[in-house]
Amino acid sequence: MELPVDDLPAREDLPWYVAPVPELLEDLGLRLVWLVVATNVLGTLFGFYYYGLNPLAEGFVEGQFSLEPLAMWPLVPDSPVATLFIALAFGAWALGRSNEYLTALAFFGCLKLGAWTPFVLLAFQADFSYTGVLMYNFLFWSHLAMVLQGFVLHRIGDFPVRAVAVAVAWYLLNDVVDYFVPVVGDPHHTLIPAEEITASGVVHTPGPHRVAAAGAVALTVLATFLALATRVKKLELGVGSLDDLR
Image 1 (cartoon, one colour):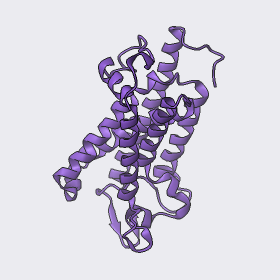
Image 2: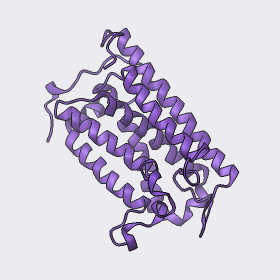
Image 3: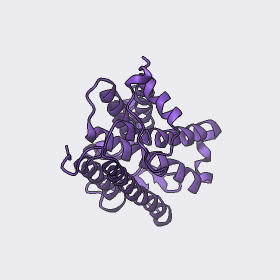
């Protein structure tokens, strides 16, 4: 379903670094919002399959899910959860039920995971040769498209502080259990082939592990800065107030 142009929220005069997507492309994405939602739902389903939920596998589980403790599963499929957040955020807006918490979580997820995956694909390019050219390019460009989507969210949300705080807490928790304090078992970050996978689990080689961790933490910091910068610029333009933290 295409939304009429008159129903779209106005594009505010924000700095390029928080709104780098051309207005024409933003408008197109918002008008075709249900196609965007459906695409992200399909991406979420593929992502869970990629991580190992497979109805054809023995016990319906293989891949990384088969290596992880069940208690940590919600923190394992980072990109599928990010695409789920953005599908829910855009869907809620299209239904007239915008939710600032979903919008903030979607922004963090799409910016962080959308950029982290191409980062590790380039950093460990030789190790990803097993994926083949088509899958490598699909992973690379589809994740960059997540970043693009994330930068449209300023049109449907104001990034109030409480919502940003929830997103920061969720993605900092992900960073902690993925790289530093796994809580249960070993670190839970997305498998990268530069680390050895053995019958007993993943060998988290210090070099690649630190590179992946540095990228993840840097992107969490960047997402926090951009979300709060968007909030500040909107307040300067008179959108909302300092007391509007809902």
